[in-house]
Image 1 (cartoon, helix red, strand yellow):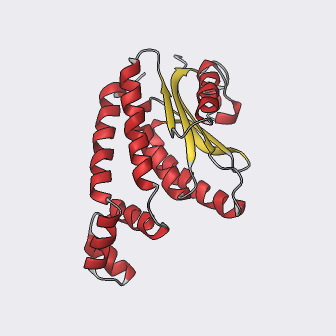
Image 2: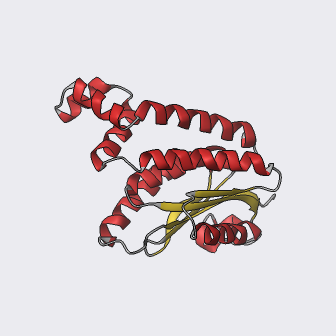
Image 3: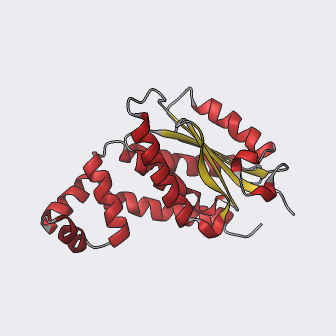
Amino acid sequence: MDGRRCVVVGEVADPAVDDREALRTSLEEGIARANEALDEETVAPFTVLRGVEELGGVLTTPERVYTALREITEAVHPVEIRFAVVYGEIDIGLATAAVAQMDGPAFQEADRLLAGLSADDRAVAFADPDVERWLLTLLTDQIRLLFGMKRTWTAYQADLVRAYRRKESMQAIADERNVSVQTVSQTLARANAKQIMAVESNLDAALAAVWGWSP
């Protein structure tokens, strides 16, 4: 079997978090949502790899990787996580469906990229030898833009945007939370929710155009 898969590894940008138990709970909730959303594309489910500092997972291709990054980062907001996404070879443990038992050039490259990210403020790095560097940079910059826009969210805004994604109805959210539709609308506007969701839609389309095929 072809060993080329999408390795995703992440690390908490600031491991000196006061409430580590709360962070782990939030991280596990985000990971669970990512695994549920990407069930059909999952080779090895996302999981916490070491304490609350590291996580990883393996997908068939990077086509829907932003969905995973979004679910995980929004769950732990405002704590930031850096990611390395590598589409490459896995030559150890591919049949185990357990990321902790896998290894290969893709994991080694992901570790290298992640180490490079720790020295600056970039949120994600991509690697795929078959995709031109300028295109990978463009995708990376789009994700950095999205993460930067979300960095200003309050916890309430982040929660409301997640609800809006699920329900796509301000009235439903207002009814559920016993607030006015105007309150929901104003909160979403301050969070730039519609603009962010439009950029996310364009990013998903770009990822599908680059990697939207089966290995």
